[in-house]
Length: 311
Image (cartoon, rainbow, N blue to C red; front, top):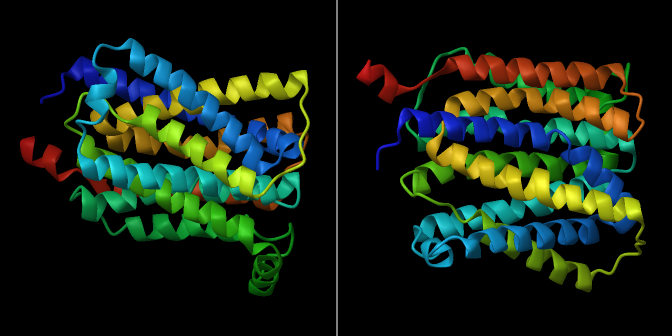
């Protein structure tokens, strides 16, 4: 089914709105994990967002039936990647030993725009210029700087910090890989469909996280702030953002949206530093800049073969 220009532009705008919402994710997630625990916070966020999205789905004629008519590869493959990403991200944020490390973790998580562009080469058959290589190198230099103490830019400092605090960084990197793959495979397996399965993915994620939470109980407490943050997280950066992103990846300008997303780490750092009251050290600002610069170079290194041939 051919997508009209106006529909494509609207879906592209949806993708950009998702990026803006995601800029608040790390700050609110860390606040909630400190009060509820990482598993409890994540399970409540995704259960609530799954409920909101399923209510929306039921309100649409034939909404539930359409989900189970979607390609099986999309439902299973993208569903697994979706759940895996959420678990990795919330554990990375919750297990970070300090609020400062949370910002480093967020920078590593936001390697996914570069990885989305890299994965577009073998999966969507894009072509790349040689400048893709320095773009990727710059981005991973940001990875390096996000894991070292300010003023200690050496291999020994990197290795020592990774050995002590490696798990949140590893989870964040696994999250980046899984979301980059998800974003591309959504286009590959469900780009021709009218609707996606985000409501189902959100609900399944919430149920799985709830089951894990009962296996590993956490100490938590409730307050008006917790309720407000849960409502915000379940509606904007979760229900709406992932719904918008899924549409953008299936029917929007995927390279444009992926390239705009390189502003997400900067937005995330600014919001997190203000909301969590963290003084961001120089190495994290530099790391963020390198990740963004790498994403820009990667974006301009990708050649859309289909557009070139139709020109």
